[in-house]
Length: 295
Image 1 (cartoon, rainbow, N blue to C red):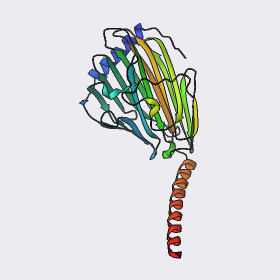
Image 2 (cartoon, helix red, strand yellow):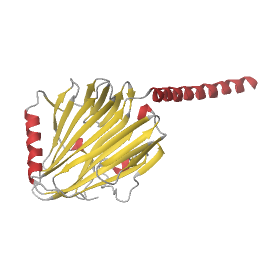
Image 3 (cartoon, one colour):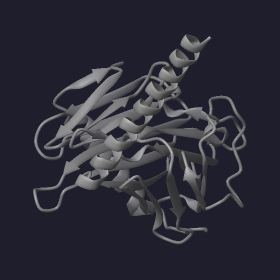
Image 4 (cartoon, rainbow, N blue to C red):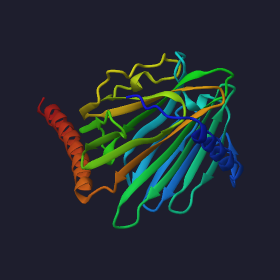
């Protein structure tokens, strides 16, 4: 699972890109909470701080595909924390055109993390919504440190919880394929650059509200030997990207996610499921009424 890379040019390119992006920002905002990116037939909400930071409500043709996705980090064997706890962040936000984006930078005396989101809706004839997230992590401490970056994802395809499967690829590119209820998600991690002793771990499971131990303050979870498949059920999955960084150096990588436009059959299935649940509830209520009347 180890992916060894050279530093030098990749690191400087990452640093230069981050600095140029932030300086070129047409609107720098501080301490904003929720952003919405919208393009053609798709939109997504990004809450970057507060009590529940997460990417949520990824709408494709009016149907939600995402319950929650968010990012965590730890240094060495220290506790896991959400990236929004790093410190004050700055942001550049552009919500127009066919590729709206949100650039975030979180920084303290130890670490500098950037998350650059770009939402894309393909033209008619290739109806797939795509979200690209470029992630960068730089060591600002005075010593060499081992950093761990975690991506947690819980997709509800076609706005339905459960009845889904997920399969993770243990080889490059690191890919998650989730299917069920007439929908499909493909998430891929590529372009790992910088750092030494780089490695990627992955895990899949049935959602139990614990997020694989990624809550703030928990010791770093161990993804080694974890399952690479899960389902059917309310599945979720997570990645861990590890790198040893000398002082001042950085690692960057990209996660690309694609969700097809809901098909007619998927929308029919979703409607039938909702109608079935309503019928069951109405039938149960009617039985109670009949039972009381017969007493």
